[in-house]
Image (cartoon, rainbow, N blue to C red; front, side):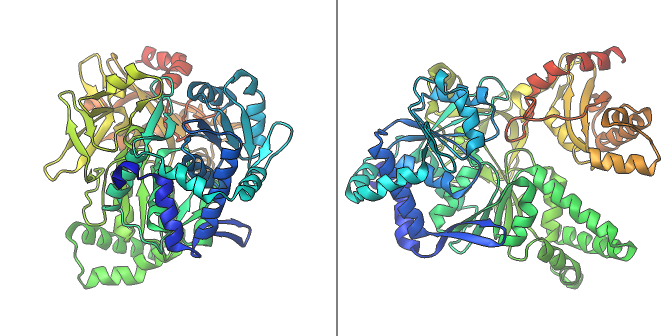
Amino acid sequence: MKSETENLPLIFQERVKEFGNRPALLSHDDEDIQAISWFEFGRLVREFALGLSSMGVGTGERMAILSENRPEWIISDLAIQAIGSISVPIYSTLTPKEIEFILLDSGASTIIISDAHQYKKIAGIKDGVPSLKRIIGFDVEGEEVVSMKSVMAVGMDEKDDAFLNLRIHGIKADNIATIIYTSGTTGRPKGVMLSHKNLISNIRASLNQIIVKSDDLYLSFLPMSHIFERMIHHLMIHQGATIAYSKGFASVGADVAFFKPTVMAGVPFLFQRIKEKIIESVKKGGFVKSKLFSWAYGKGKERLATDSNHLFSRAAERLVLKKIRDRINPRLRYFISGGAPLPKEVGEFFWALGIPLLEGYGLTETSPVVSVNSLNAVKLGTVGKPISGVEVKIGSDGEIQVKGPNVMKGYWNMPEATKEVIKDGWFSTGDTGSIDKDGFLIITDRKKDIIITALGKNVAPQRLETLLRQSRYIKDAVIFGDKKPHLVALIVPELERLKEYSNGMEISYDNDKELINDKRIYRFYEDIVHKMLKDLARFEQIRRFALISELTQDTGELTPTLKIKRRVVEEKYKSVIDELYAAL
């Protein structure tokens, strides 16, 4: 049966034959585009796969990929899977100690790295990883590192397509395709085993709600080591679309202007920033421009609420809204948001402009998509309806549970942890939420993050933090209050905007620390916190807060996908939090 033997490399081979000379992968150096056709894409995967096989890489071996986004990443991933091995993606921003843990836990025999910077990390830990036999580099080679080109050269000489086809056809749908390590926000990272069946079922079910066409161009900038970006890559490959690679988050704006993608995926932080830039641009345009935008935006919201197309809405579309969309990117069909909760106001903003922003929900353990808003069925403030074949129910304690072909095989080498979260086929997500009368899923918070105050009130901190981040002067916020009578918070200011404000108020300071410790700045933030949370219940109000300089991945407070490690933050700032409560 094809369903039992279907796998990702087999689907890829079919797309190579189908789309041939059409562009598959794009990257750029200044103004020059480097294009790889589908035929070339297929050849590179085939040669790398044969080269790996000739080096003795066997079925079921774990092979790590430590690289930034680039065409070689997906070429490596597909080549690893084509010979029946298992890819283990590692975030390029992880520290040597974090990388060492993943290599040891997975028992990886090979690591594929991008450049000399990544090799420096490996050089210091490789002797402590007994399973590691090979290091392969995209842009680095030496005594201990063989270049990807050298491996491909061996594969080119082999030219044994029959051998490779035999290995591909021998891969069962239930075989493990990849092991992806969780970010460790709630403890040690766990290796999530995802099969070809897990991923393929999720790809096809997602395509029923996220329309991808063969002439689409997708801009990739989120890390491919994250399941969200990896899945979207496979959506594009499945449909024969083109993938363009951004040079990184800092250059996304320039890359959008350069490639003019039709589809983009991002995290809420990106869309919040785009919204702020649009509003700032409007304000700089003067009184008339601001008034015209307010009128047109109001009509856009009206059209969104009523699906109205009366004369004034069409006028707003022609005079203002289309011009804004054209400045962003005239070819853009829609955005996809994932990775964290999207503030309802941000989603409403883009839909009112006429740019669909499709928010979804998922986890690494669910391959990842559980639900998503579609172009034809959207409800702002929700994460959409479950995709086909996936069942969702809410447990007695409010926890979201998922069942379907997308649920992982389990955690690598952690059978007990697997049994804790999968019972009778139902995966316990660790998130709390509800399903409304129309079948749309609403996320409340992480179950372990729910705060129960000393008064017995349940507070979802993520909801409050999302509201606070709506202020242009707040970059991040972390709320505490478990078993305490009141809530307190640590707030990270948007320093550049804060400096603009302080200059306007003629507040002098010698350094950033002096600025955020100024009493006038604290009072300014008191007003902001009150404004952002004014509609919440009394027990959800922040009684006191402290301004802190930064939360970063380098100092351990954030994961590579910018999720907050609450335990780390709470431990690091324990004395600050204690002082906040002592002052109440």
